[in-house]
Amino acid sequence: MKELIILGSTGSIGKQGLDVVRKRNDIKVTALTAANNVKLLEEQAREFKPLIVAVLDTQAAKDLACRLSDTYIKVLSGEEGIIEAAQSRGDTVLSAIVGIAGLRPTLAAINAKKTIALANKETMVTAGEIIKAAAKENGVKILPVDSEHSAIFQSLQGADEKSLNKIILTASGGPFYGKSEEELVNITAHEALKHPNWSMGNKITIDSATLMNKGLEVIEAVHLFDVNACDIEVVIHRQSIVHSAVELSDGAVIAQMGTPDMRLPIQYALTYPERGECFERLSLSKMGTLTFEKPDRKTFRCLDICIDAINKGGLCPTIINAANEVAVDLFLKEKIGFLDIPQLIEETSLAINSKQNFDLDDIFLADKAAREYVLNLV
Ligand code: NAD
Ligand code: MG
Image 1: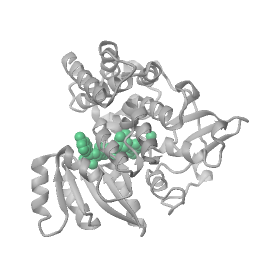
Image 2: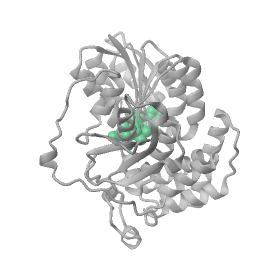
Image 3: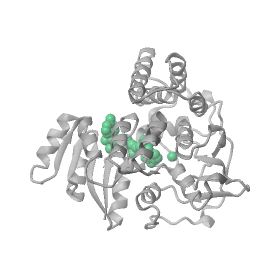
Image 4: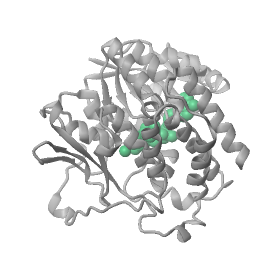
């Protein structure tokens, strides 16, 4: 029996992770955490009977403790509670909190020697080197859940490590593919939240519309597969069937394909190296044509902003990530326009000082400074 802790169980990835658990009889859920969605967390707790649930919001945690008072489930609260849950009984952690908020709990889980099924890309973006060093020190595996990175990881199974020549990172292009800058000026949050192929949390859906998500994924791939950003080619693939590919030294290109369903990469990270159940079969003849194009880097500037940040290194990825988190939040609240997102990120990246050598405290200081900078600009 595998014992699984899910950080962010009420979110899009968390819920699909529980769906994977429902399909299997070899995974027992031992802890669940969320920011505040007490009603759903209670339902999940009653169905999966974990030992621990943790809620970020202390008032919501009190409410949940009342609701679960007829059970033996321990209710924890605050970030400390989530960290305690991340380190509690269990061998695997599905890291599915959104944003840099996932960093401390994920690092805590690594230090408690848990295998990490990593969905929370912001953890790798902001602290890739720290995370990798901690994983190495603790002998812990980090298995990608992000569909592109899972596809790359799957495509590399059996390949000699030194044979990786190039990563081909596919992108759907999001809801505004083909639009000009003028057409994007008055885009609303409602329009941006309609992704053509994937159903995801709000923040990543907006990131997909700006191509920030693809930029963050380039940074994530640099860390996960030890390559340079220039070894990654981003290709627009509207159908989201080829989830990404690798080019090997002899020119062979190996790709992983499937329907756009996150349960496959989640399950693969939870059952690796074994293969699990099939959720949905892909019929290539029904799919018909698959297309591949270059991204429009001028209109969707966030992609190059991210590549620039990882090439500069240091705290630059943390700064652009923080600026983006705040900008997306402001856009969702209709306080800024769609094109203000890249603008604010760029201005912040120029204003906040980075440094090459940094520790975890420096990351959180840079994150805070970038957030305050964006809020002052608006
Ligand atoms: P979501 O918003 O749907 O869910 C986020 C979860 O984290 C929720 O359970 C929420 O309660 C919890 N949470 C939010 N803020 C928190 C905080 N400050 N502290 C503790 N918990 C907090 O997000 P999602 O779409 O499931 O994405 C989760 C992560 O997975 C993101 O990093 C995203 O980039 C990545 N990811 C998601 C998808 C997808 O299909 N949704 C695909 C690839 C990668
Ligand atoms: Mg992805």
